[in-house]
Image 1 (cartoon, rainbow, N blue to C red):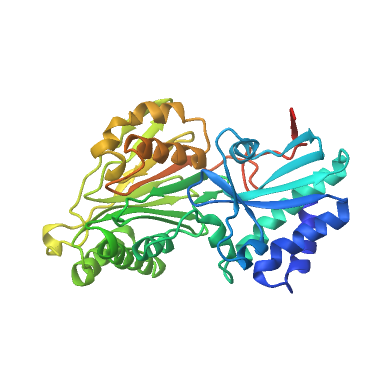
Image 2 (cartoon, rainbow, N blue to C red):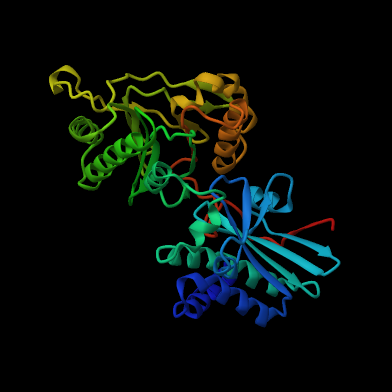
Amino acid sequence: MDGVRSELPRLLTATEMAAPGEAVDVVAEDLLRRFGATEVSFLIIDLTGRAVVRLSTAAVVEAGQRWDRVELLGSVYEQVVRTQRPCQETTDQGERVIYPVTNRGDAIGLLEMLLPTGPSEGVLDAVGGAAHALAYIVIANQRFTDLYTWGKRSRPFTLAAEIQHRLLPLSLSCEAAQFALCGDLASSEDISGDTFDYTLDRDTLHLSVTDTMGHDLDAALSATILLGALRGARRMGADLVEQARLADRALADHGPSGHATGQLMRVNLRTGTAHLVNAGHPWPLRIRDGEVEEIACEVDPPFGLSLPVSRHPYRCQELELRPGDRLILLTDGMLERDAEKVDLPVLLQETRRLHPRETVLMLTTAVLDACGGLLQDDATVVCLDWYGIQDSKRHVGSGADIRRASPGRTSP
């Protein structure tokens, strides 16, 4: 952590006067100068999670120029992203070092350097600190520029897709001492209005997964109303039942495409107690002691039906969480039509030791493959690993559950 502490304030100072789109270039130039590197690259993970793009501001200047996109599967980059451990290898051009650029479990990308000779431990520690600092720099600067958004996209978005993706959390992953979570959304060709959301308060984790009726722009607009109502109620301090009631009312009054199903959840990080409201949504799945099971819960009507409160009060139900539990929240696009070909319990068994980030990617990939790459309905999944309220053995200061170590060598 000493490398992180020394690099972060220095690099933040170096980049604060640069244009937002040039901040990564400032870091690259700093590393080139300090360590005599011959090449420095930042590779950002694209929205699919299946490739990285070598980010360069020069690519934006020349219209129509394709960026260097590298498929992750089977590459050394996949190894670093998956393990969140650095890698060093000897090449014909020199020593190649790759570090994860990650913050709180959110794998943003990779820092890659080519050095003329083998680096010392001090150099490696400084590069690791620079990689962690780069995560903060990207997070801070992406508020002011589209550069990083361009890098993440492999194809243009429709208006409905643009709206849908703007509804998602800025980071799809989050990690703390008590938990790790990640969500993934595989959109259908005409957008079906899925969303997921989370936020972390001082002592509470809030989660939601929703699925609006309809397709394309109507579905995206309904999802905007629904999620806006849920976030507004949550930020006013409303409990789960009141959040559900206000969302139901908002969708009934303003939604262009009818009702929506949803699951709202709160986890108290001090006690480990979880509560949920289920509004016509598929039951959660839980992996405990290696066994996959549905969590049977009371199901209330979907949002937007506008029934009298006396006829359908939303019910807040307690959910037991034990250290080591993995919880899966999903939409019906993960279960219906061609997605039924995926043996979800078996796949959950096979991925139970992977980080939630890797698990959700494998789950949505399996559904995409089963549907021939063309989904008729959005497929959304959120994976939550619960470690417990007294877990002090996890190391998340560097943005993921890893211990500081020298990079492992791979064969050239």
